[in-house]
Amino acid sequence: MSDALQLILEDNDGTQLETSCSRFAVVWQGKELWVQAVGDQLLIGVDVEEGDTEYANLLLRPQATNLVSLQLEMEPVMADDDDHVHGPDCNH
Image 1 (tube, rainbow, N blue to C red):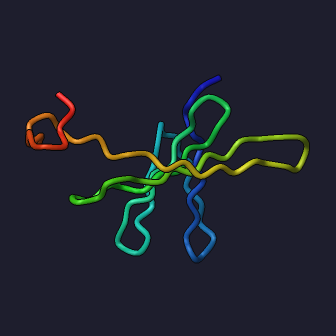
Image 2: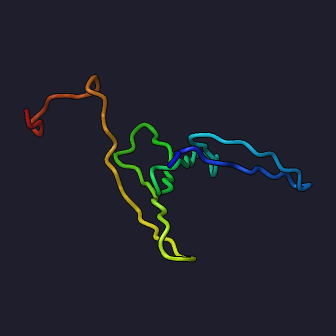
Image 3: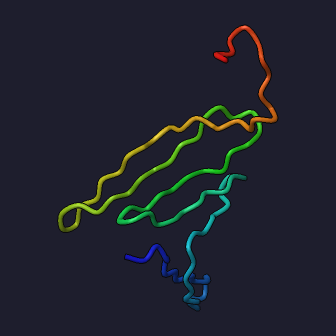
């Protein structure tokens, strides 16, 4: 199965543009909402800003006819090793 997404973009006047891509983003309320296919799932995630400690992903999976499952996953933001500060809570 290909992870390419087939997109149909439509203007207000009904003009349609068809294209394909591996992922796309929609800017909504100042945040980038990224959409990409991962196997038989559709992954929807928001961009991460400085200071964020976690981010959310929505996974949309096909089920039986006319059904889908929707799962919210919270993931920790992985800090760059260059930003690591050794302190009393450091485990190494």
